[in-house]
Amino acid sequence: MLAAADMLFAQSKLPGSVTMDAIAAAASVGKGTLFRAFGNRDGLLDALWATKIAILKERVTTGVPPFDESATPLDRLIAFLDSILMFKIANRHLIHAREATGGLLQSPHYRWMHAETKNFIMEASNQVDEDYAIYSAHALLSALHIDLIDQMLAQGLSVETIRRLQAARGKGVIRIV
Image 1 (tube, one colour):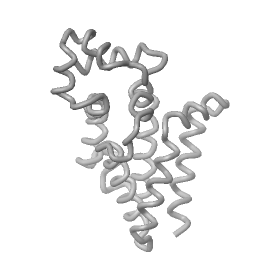
Image 2 (cartoon, one colour):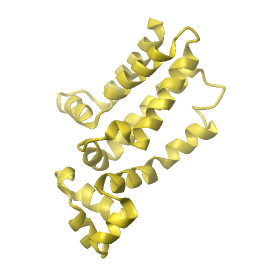
Image 3 (cartoon, one colour):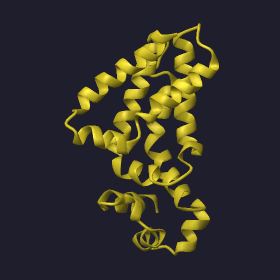
Image 4 (tube, one colour):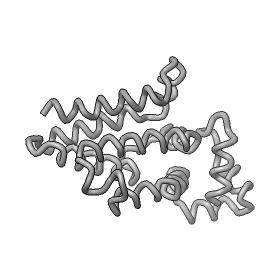
Protein backbone atom coordinates (compact mmCIF):
# COMPACT_ATOMS: atom_id res chain seq x y z
CA MET A 1 0.00 0.00 0.00
CA LEU A 2 2.83 2.38 0.85
CA ALA A 3 4.64 1.59 -2.39
CA ALA A 4 1.48 2.29 -4.38
CA ALA A 5 0.95 5.57 -2.54
CA ASP A 6 4.58 6.58 -3.05
CA MET A 7 4.29 5.87 -6.78
CA LEU A 8 1.11 7.94 -7.12
CA PHE A 9 2.54 10.89 -5.17
CA ALA A 10 5.74 10.77 -7.24
CA GLN A 11 3.81 10.74 -10.53
CA SER A 12 1.36 13.49 -9.60
CA LYS A 13 1.97 17.11 -10.52
CA LEU A 14 -0.23 17.99 -7.53
CA PRO A 15 0.63 15.45 -4.78
CA GLY A 16 -2.00 17.01 -2.53
CA SER A 17 -4.70 15.87 -4.95
CA VAL A 18 -3.90 12.14 -4.71
CA THR A 19 -6.96 10.56 -3.11
CA MET A 20 -7.35 7.56 -0.86
CA ASP A 21 -9.57 6.07 -3.58
CA ALA A 22 -6.71 6.31 -6.09
CA ILE A 23 -4.24 4.82 -3.61
CA ALA A 24 -6.60 1.96 -2.80
CA ALA A 25 -7.08 1.21 -6.50
CA ALA A 26 -3.32 1.32 -7.18
CA ALA A 27 -2.68 -0.98 -4.22
CA SER A 28 -5.52 -3.33 -5.23
CA VAL A 29 -7.17 -3.01 -1.82
CA GLY A 30 -10.41 -1.53 -0.63
CA LYS A 31 -10.49 2.02 0.68
CA GLY A 32 -11.59 0.66 4.05
CA THR A 33 -8.36 -1.32 4.25
CA LEU A 34 -6.37 1.90 3.88
CA PHE A 35 -8.37 3.63 6.58
CA ARG A 36 -8.04 0.66 8.94
CA ALA A 37 -4.29 0.53 8.36
CA PHE A 38 -3.53 4.27 8.54
CA GLY A 39 -6.56 6.02 10.03
CA ASN A 40 -6.62 8.77 7.42
CA ARG A 41 -4.59 10.29 4.58
CA ASP A 42 -2.20 12.05 6.97
CA GLY A 43 -1.63 8.75 8.76
CA LEU A 44 -0.73 7.13 5.45
CA LEU A 45 1.60 10.01 4.58
CA ASP A 46 3.22 9.85 8.02
CA ALA A 47 3.74 6.09 7.65
CA LEU A 48 5.34 6.59 4.25
CA TRP A 49 7.50 9.39 5.64
CA ALA A 50 8.55 7.10 8.52
CA THR A 51 9.81 4.44 6.11
CA LYS A 52 11.83 7.00 4.18
CA ILE A 53 13.35 8.87 7.14
CA ALA A 54 14.20 5.73 9.13
CA ILE A 55 17.80 5.67 7.90
CA LEU A 56 18.44 9.25 9.02
CA LYS A 57 16.79 8.60 12.39
CA GLU A 58 19.00 5.57 12.90
CA ARG A 59 22.15 7.51 11.98
CA VAL A 60 21.30 10.26 14.46
CA THR A 61 20.23 7.86 17.23
CA THR A 62 23.24 5.57 16.96
CA GLY A 63 25.76 8.38 16.53
CA VAL A 64 26.99 7.50 13.06
CA PRO A 65 29.28 10.25 11.67
CA PRO A 66 28.67 13.14 11.43
CA PHE A 67 26.38 12.62 14.44
CA ASP A 68 28.97 10.95 16.66
CA GLU A 69 30.65 12.43 19.71
CA SER A 70 33.80 13.39 17.76
CA ALA A 71 31.76 16.09 15.98
CA THR A 72 30.96 19.28 17.82
CA PRO A 73 27.31 19.93 18.70
CA LEU A 74 27.35 22.79 16.18
CA ASP A 75 28.64 20.48 13.47
CA ARG A 76 25.94 17.94 14.36
CA LEU A 77 23.29 20.69 14.15
CA ILE A 78 24.52 21.79 10.72
CA ALA A 79 24.72 18.17 9.50
CA PHE A 80 21.22 17.47 10.82
CA LEU A 81 19.66 20.49 9.10
CA ASP A 82 21.51 19.60 5.91
CA SER A 83 20.26 16.02 6.10
CA ILE A 84 16.67 17.23 6.53
CA LEU A 85 17.04 19.61 3.56
CA MET A 86 18.41 16.87 1.32
CA PHE A 87 15.76 14.40 2.55
CA LYS A 88 13.01 16.86 1.66
CA ILE A 89 14.46 17.55 -1.77
CA ALA A 90 14.86 13.82 -2.49
CA ASN A 91 11.30 13.11 -1.32
CA ARG A 92 9.70 16.28 -2.65
CA HIS A 93 6.51 14.55 -3.80
CA LEU A 94 5.83 13.05 -0.37
CA ILE A 95 6.77 16.22 1.49
CA HIS A 96 4.52 18.34 -0.72
CA ALA A 97 1.60 16.04 -0.03
CA ARG A 98 2.18 16.02 3.76
CA GLU A 99 3.10 19.67 4.23
CA ALA A 100 -0.02 20.73 2.33
CA THR A 101 -2.29 19.29 5.00
CA GLY A 102 -2.93 20.59 8.48
CA GLY A 103 -1.41 19.22 11.63
CA LEU A 104 2.15 18.96 10.34
CA LEU A 105 3.61 20.52 13.48
CA GLN A 106 1.97 17.79 15.55
CA SER A 107 3.21 14.99 13.31
CA PRO A 108 5.72 12.60 14.85
CA HIS A 109 8.28 13.53 12.19
CA TYR A 110 8.18 17.24 12.86
CA ARG A 111 8.23 16.68 16.61
CA TRP A 112 11.32 14.46 16.19
CA MET A 113 13.08 16.98 13.93
CA HIS A 114 12.26 19.77 16.36
CA ALA A 115 13.45 17.85 19.42
CA GLU A 116 16.75 16.93 17.75
CA THR A 117 17.32 20.49 16.52
CA LYS A 118 16.52 21.92 19.96
CA ASN A 119 18.90 19.45 21.63
CA PHE A 120 21.71 20.25 19.20
CA ILE A 121 21.21 23.97 19.90
CA MET A 122 21.28 23.41 23.66
CA GLU A 123 24.39 21.22 23.41
CA ALA A 124 26.17 23.75 21.19
CA SER A 125 25.81 26.51 23.75
CA ASN A 126 25.64 25.88 27.45
CA GLN A 127 24.45 29.50 27.89
CA VAL A 128 21.17 29.06 26.02
CA ASP A 129 17.91 28.65 27.83
CA GLU A 130 15.33 26.13 26.69
CA ASP A 131 12.85 28.76 25.47
CA TYR A 132 15.48 30.15 23.09
CA ALA A 133 16.31 26.65 21.84
CA ILE A 134 12.63 25.79 21.31
CA TYR A 135 12.00 28.98 19.34
CA SER A 136 15.24 28.72 17.35
CA ALA A 137 14.54 25.11 16.40
CA HIS A 138 11.14 26.11 15.01
CA ALA A 139 12.72 29.06 13.17
CA LEU A 140 15.43 26.89 11.60
CA LEU A 141 12.97 24.19 10.57
CA SER A 142 10.56 26.72 9.08
CA ALA A 143 13.17 27.47 6.41
CA LEU A 144 12.96 23.81 5.42
CA HIS A 145 9.32 23.90 4.35
CA ILE A 146 9.20 22.36 0.88
CA ASP A 147 7.27 25.26 -0.68
CA LEU A 148 9.97 27.67 0.49
CA ILE A 149 12.74 25.38 -0.78
CA ASP A 150 11.01 25.16 -4.17
CA GLN A 151 10.60 28.95 -4.27
CA MET A 152 14.30 29.50 -3.53
CA LEU A 153 15.24 27.03 -6.27
CA ALA A 154 12.83 28.75 -8.69
CA GLN A 155 14.45 32.10 -7.90
CA GLY A 156 17.81 30.71 -8.99
CA LEU A 157 19.41 29.64 -5.73
CA SER A 158 21.24 26.35 -6.19
CA VAL A 159 20.94 23.49 -3.73
CA GLU A 160 24.57 24.11 -2.76
CA THR A 161 23.86 27.79 -2.08
CA ILE A 162 20.85 26.91 0.07
CA ARG A 163 22.98 24.40 1.99
CA ARG A 164 25.70 26.98 2.58
CA LEU A 165 23.27 29.69 3.69
CA GLN A 166 21.39 27.26 5.91
CA ALA A 167 24.66 26.31 7.64
CA ALA A 168 25.43 29.98 8.18
CA ARG A 169 21.98 30.52 9.66
CA GLY A 170 22.46 27.58 12.04
CA LYS A 171 25.81 28.99 13.12
CA GLY A 172 24.19 32.37 13.61
CA VAL A 173 21.66 30.89 16.02
CA ILE A 174 24.51 29.64 18.16
CA ARG A 175 26.56 32.84 17.92
CA ILE A 176 23.64 34.96 19.13
CA VAL A 177 23.68 33.39 22.57
